[in-house]
Length: 357
Ligand code: SF4
Image 1 (cartoon, rainbow, N blue to C red):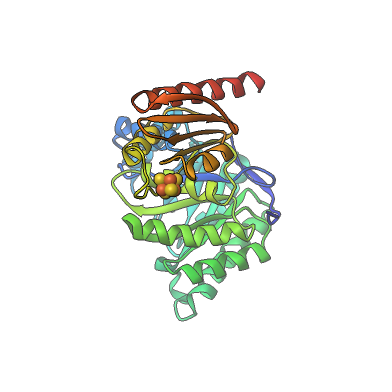
Image 2: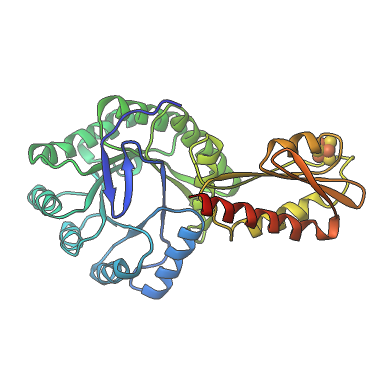
């Protein structure tokens, strides 16, 4: 897939744009003043596939929290600040990796100049993140796509005049078609990396489906350098997992283990549903530096054919299962031992990869 060219910026140690792989951002639910809980949340997001983490910083106590978190966080941090330029300036002075500024909630032009100067003097990244729900008042009579784009263009004037280009852009709507259009136009107009998301996608499968359509379509067009899935959920784990699966689905996640499985039918020879749940839980704990495909199939009719295409496959038979490694049956195992055998093979494949690297 041909990707739109952008410049590259570094959010802490994570490269965004240029030739770097597409990274995943997730966002904290916990107030950053509760430092220990917040750190656990960041670690959980990292384990679920996030590469960077955004935290709302609504007041001075939250600012102290995020500054402490910066010392221990395994992921680069982006401070999400609205209505309070003073807190934004202090966050940049404290060396935060990135700062998200919303054109609709930033009112002070003088402090915006100061912010850009401070960013330029340090290493932090500016994410200009417009949102259709908080457009600047003078643009609200325009159509939402135009208003989103204009709000970005207006906010780019100061950094461009000051020759500051460590910038990531985003412009999100709740509407899938608007989101696709706005990102196409951002990609056609600017060479800054794009953070892509559908805002307020919702809860559960509705949110996942809407996000998958919007982000999948945009990514398939070669657009986007960093993504976030915005789901109504109590923690950032699900949104991280969904983002990773979207990237994997469009062939843009070059690491980790993909589990494919048959839908089951009247021919199914074992409890495939429970088996797949168990293997997926086990896979979450195994980190593979290269992509690996694992196939779980319910019978000996289509199963062997499908399982053969994967790096590692299992096809259920009558009380037994065939284990395939890259197209070859390596053994027949009893179904009750199949999970352990599969995990053993998987771990061995992953450690062989690591040795080769
Ligand atoms: S692989 Fe076998 S059990 Fe699974 S859906 Fe296909 S025919 Fe049915």
